[in-house]
Length: 192
Image (cartoon, rainbow, N blue to C red; front, top):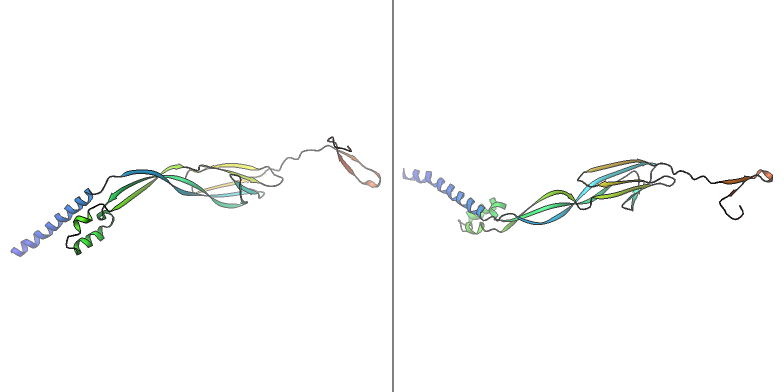
């Protein structure tokens, strides 16, 4: 009978010890500490087509000929928080194994904060917000647009370039012998 009473009481003692260790280990965790913000690269896929094909410029830098696909890199602000934690939070299985193998000697040392935990959260704010797009083709007026980074994954533009209006030039046509037509500009140029 007596051995039965010890065996039923033993799991209860073990449970109390494990609960005490868990409370002690959680008590060794430090509070969250705000850190300076950091920035990560957030990419937006950009595709541009035009009729007729033309040269694409982003912020006055040549990119290529349309149709073209590329990426815009924006810097997204992230809040960062850190706290010190013990191995009971970060490596609970490892800490339990070492505590059991060391016959409990590791227990007081494992509750000392020895690791750090970092949490980051996007703020939705972007450092590089706007990009100027321009498409140019010979004989056509250029097309321009501004893209604002707001966390979107894909942005597509299609432009129809308008022909450049031709400027009429006044000319004097005279037909000398032999049917040859000679054109002279009448814009105060010598010989006119």
